[in-house]
Length: 170
Image (tube, rainbow, N blue to C red):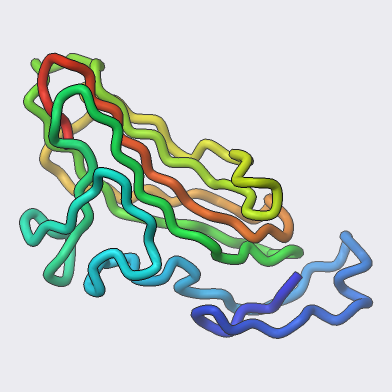
């Protein structure tokens, strides 16, 4: 368990706090997802079928794009970040955008966002988001997930886009 100090740095939680699950410990942990704006390309990310794009971007000059080809699966994973235990409040936020050539209302393609437990061989401990190609298109949307009750975890976040054979979605 740790008290965050921005980025990768954190201090060990004192044993009297760590050993008592009823104790909440005030600390600040920010920017645990490193290079989340992809300004350093895929530095600290593991891409499989993902590309860096300059259009469209939410902010900055780059974004990651997954999908965009029929009959494909693309993943993008960042490991390892820390979810401290004993949080009074904690959240994971990201911006996402759907672009698709699927017919309006078609749910043929999908995106899944999962949190993985890095200490148990990347077992999924939370599915954060499941969205399909029938979702709102061509609009940046922010998703915020409460991770307060997850307890201490060395975690990874994985984005997966699956395209069927009819039309591409990115």
